[in-house]
Amino acid sequence: MVIAASGLAVYAATGDRTTIAGTATTVSATAAAPTSTPRRTPRPTPAPPPPAPMVATEDLERLLIDDAALSELVGVSLAPDFAPVNTTMSIEATDNPQCRGALTVAAEPAYGESRWMAIRRQTSRNRDTKRSLVQAVVSYPSAQAATAYVEAQARTWRICDGQIISFDPDTNPLPIRIHSVRFDDTGLSAVATSETQGSNCFRELRSVANVVIDTAACNPATVAAAEGADDAERVAAMIAERIPG
Image (cartoon, rainbow, N blue to C red; front, side, top):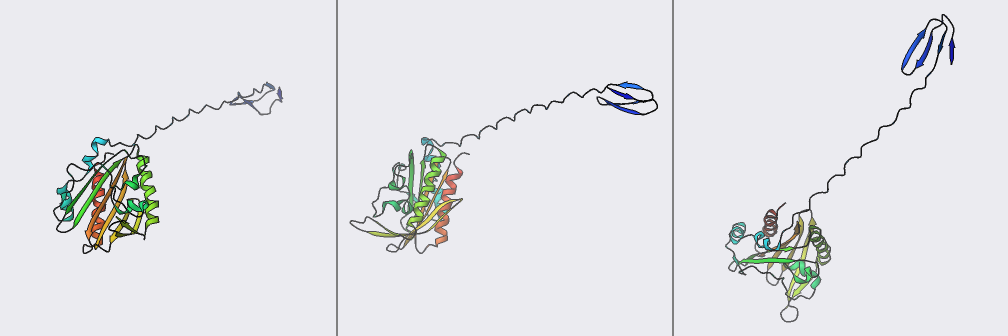
């Protein structure tokens, strides 16, 4: 309790009001009620992103580019080697199976036990000009598995960069030099050069959704290197555009 003298101004805090008293007054100071901190409403947990689209086995063949489009791409008429398309891996023998993936499309030693599910591949060629395009699509149980395969091949191709690998080493060896390996955001690429045949095969490997896209453009050495590399990359890009999502 506080006693205020007459004639003096007394300021008494009563809650949130201020009172001025001109006479002797008894003023009670009332303590302000404690304020409580409001509880924060927890933010809702963001929904997980939708799963990546999956390409089913029965849809793989539709991803391949038809011969009319391929012929327009390279400027010569191409015809398919397989009818219907091939559903198996390539199994040619080499003296270094580890590097087979950098040499040819859909090489069985390269895919090995990588948990691939199904494959569709096709070779289209012009026998007069000795130009060919090879394309394959290989499905995996998930997008992560497809990406992991490409990343694993990138490590292997770098090891093989600069090496000479021989096809059919026991009976009719054909030496092929692997070089110009590159791995970036667009995919994995390399060049396989045969001095004996005077030819270059430009390789391209990438993944989209649960599919690995595996392509090659093979040309005589007289065809500009930039043109061959561009053909392999463009075929891979055309296939990628057909994959949902």
